Length: 233
Length: 194
Image (cartoon, rainbow over the protein chains, first blue to last red):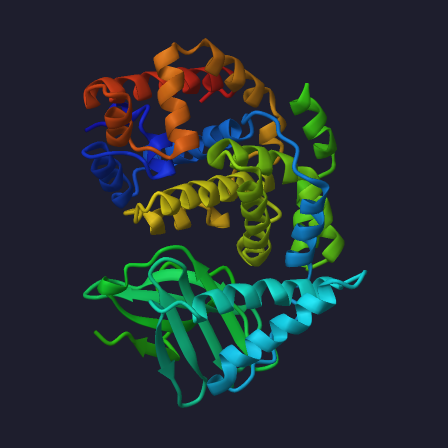
C-alpha cells in the first residue's frame, strides 16, 4: 500500500485505535523508516492535540489546583523512609493514621499530603487478596507487589542513586516476550517506591526487572538489569 | 470565547516554563496548572463524564507530566499538546479499565504520550490559527463523520468497536473516519503548505 492510500489513517494509528490491515501497513512503513509516514504521524499528533483542546469548556473546583500542587510539588524532593519489609503494612497503616489526623490541622504541608496519597495507594494494593508478592534481595532489597486490577507497586531499600543523567526504569517481562517499559523512578535516601497503575495480565507475566537507563528512559533495557524478580506460577 | 480567554495566558513562552519545570521549581507547577489545568480537566470530563473522577485523573495527569519532565526538551518541545495527550490517555485508560476491558494496546497508549514525541511541534499550536480552522472544519463535517470522530477521540473506540456500537458495517465506519480525517487534514493543509 502506498503512503497516499494510508491518508486518513494516521490519526487513529497515533490514538492506538486503527484496525488491521491499515495498522500493519503503517507499522511496515515505519519499520522501513518511511520519511513520508514519519512526517504524517507528526502531523497526526498535531491534529489530535488541537482536537483535544476543543472539548467543551468545564470548570474544575478550586480545590483541584491545591490537590495538584500538593501531590506534585514535592513528588521528586523526598522519598519514603520505609519501615522493614516485615512490618510494611502495619507501618503504612500507622502512618496513614498519623497523616489523617494531621490532615485535620490547618496548613498541612504538601509533603505530608503527597505521602498520604502514596500511602493510600500502597495500602490499597497491599491489602487486596489477589495481590501477589515477589521478594528480591542481594544488594538492593525489596518487593514487587502486583495486582491484576490495580497495577504494580515496586519498593526497594539499599538502592544507590542511579547517577547523574540516569534513572531507574521498571520493566514488565511477559512470558516469552520482550520487556515492556513500566515507568521511571529515582532512589532517594537509599529507598524507592514506584507505582504503575492500571490492569496487568499476571497470567502472562514472567518477571519484573529494573535497569539503569538514560534519564529520559528507554523503550528497551540498554543495561543489564540490577534487579530481576521472577513471578512464580 | 472560552478558548481565547483560556489561551490568553499562553503569550508567555512555554519554553521558559518547561525549563523551570525541569529545574523542579515548585511555583512552575502552579503556572503549568494555571495554563493547562482547565483545558486538561475539560477534556478528561468529556471522556469520563464524572466531575470527581475527572479531578482525580487531572491530578494524575499533572503528576505524570511532572515525573516525566526529564524526557521533555524545552528547546523544541510543545508543552500543551503533550499535557493534553497525557490527559486524554489517562481518561481513556480509566474508561477502558472501568468497563473491564483489558486493553490490548495499553503499552502503545502508554508510549504515545512519551515527551520525546512532542519535540517538533510549534509551541503555540493549541492557540494557533490552525486550531481555529480545525474547529470550523469539524463543524462542517457530516453528522456521521462527527459521530465517528467523537467516538474515537472521546470514547476511545476502534473502528470495529464503533461499527458494533452504532450498528453499521465496518467498511462504512472506516469510510466515515477516513473521509472526516482527510477533510480535517485538508483544512490544516491550507494553513501549512507542504
